[in-house]
Length: 296
Image 1 (cartoon, rainbow, N blue to C red):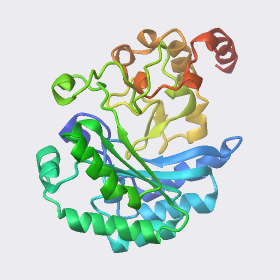
Image 2 (image 1 turned 90 degrees about the vertical axis):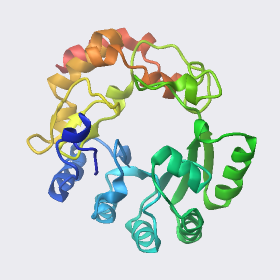
Image 3 (image 1 turned 45 degrees about the vertical axis):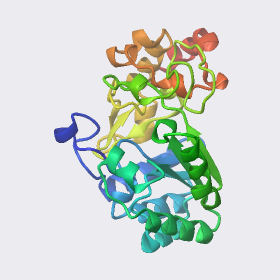
Image 4 (image 1 turned 60 degrees about the vertical axis):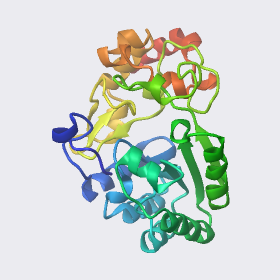
């Protein structure tokens, strides 16, 4: 819904905000799939709550009944009484809030942003007590916590304002960042949820998701660098892009291993840090290659 401008950051989107007519076309196109998608998620490299029509977008998708669940990921700083009320009324199923620190000082250090922390907590408390059926998941990354006291404070501050709460593990997935200096632990051995890393040469993302950026470009994963643009929803229906020869060829190449899929994929390890055993496709690669051969 909102993305970092290509001209300023060198990636993501040529448009900062998705047009509402583009969004409606995406949602309308989803009816052409054989069944409802599992999840529609408002996320990416940007802040969904910056879009002035975000509640209308959620409501439109709910009315069309195209997804089992609708989820939004946010840093939560824009949440106030009026916006929270709109999100509740929109029918949003799950709100994922990423916390950046347990003090205003930490927010200033990490985000270069001054916040009224007491007000932030008050707004989240009102939201939780008024949310109805919406589920709230609050999380923080481990490197934003200085010590066990901070960990205890995190759970104390947000435990009664969430249905789910977690401290996630920092993962070394972006080149050029000193993860060892930021982390207290070995960042190469644990997944995002603290689980043991699983070995796989195939990224599963192109087989179960697509991301539509604010300018309408469709990409096969949620990395900050994209291996391929599969199409654009302003010109082509989303279902046609999903079933296209271009998309299926990319999946076929991926089944040979990430290093054969693209130059971007060959350098990417993002998929490894969120991998579950049911996501590992290596032992099924030959079967899938045969299926995609007939789908071209």
